[in-house]
Every structure is written in structure tokens, then in C-alpha cells.
Length: 136
Image (cartoon, rainbow, N blue to C red; front, side, top):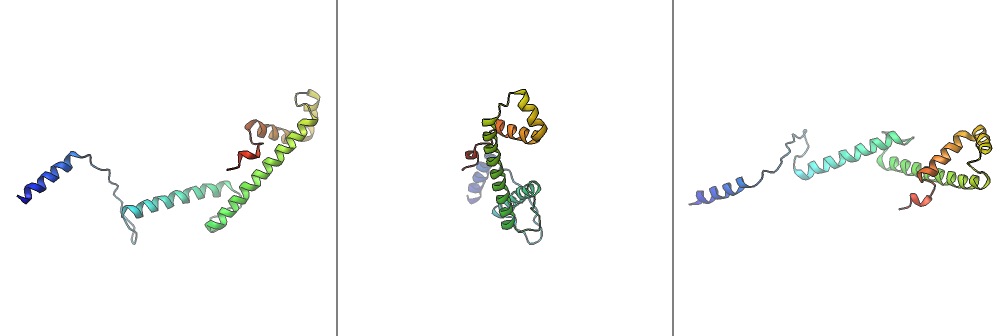
């Protein structure tokens, strides 16, 4: 009668959808339980994102510790925010003195600061001039 009960339970389980099982062969000394695997995947994702940041941020090197690397990244982003704010103020000041639609003004500005003007106009069009863009 005990085996009949077990069969019934097994039959009930057969009706359920089988769970997707990821079989992982652990390296020597590494655990295979789901919490350890999830933690390993989480760390791999973090490391992948850090490598992306290393490629994007000048002065980031693989040999630095994570805390130092994050400090470098934070300083770089703050520097970019300051540059954007400065360019925004410069654009505002320039727009008071120049009519950007005037052909004469455009020729003068192209000769003196062509790249600077194009960059300021691009930043203004993209909406980066507002410092609140970066506030959390």
C-alpha cells in the first residue's frame, strides 16, 4: 500500500511542467548550488559592465582596484557634467551677442571657432545644456 501512494505522487509530478534545469559543471573548488551559481552570474555581469566602463573612461586600468576605478569613473562623469554646464553657459552668453542666423556672423564664427560652435549647437540641440539633466 505504501508503494501505491508513491506511484500516485509520481503520477502527479508527471502532470506538472518540467522545470528548466541548467546543468553546470563546477570547476575544482567551486559550488554548484543555485545560490552560488546566481552569485557567480551576478559577479560576471558586474565585471563585464566594469570592463565596458574601463574602455570608455580614460585613466581606468584593469590593475586598479574596484573602489579606485569607481572613483576615477565618478570624477570623469563629474568632469563631463562641468564641461557641459560650462559650454551651456558659453552658448547662452554667445547667443546674447550673436544672431546665429546671420550669414556674416556665421562666417566670422566659422573662421574663428568652427568646431566650438558646432559642438555647442549640437549640445544645445540634444538638450545637454540643462544641468538638471544630470541631477538625480
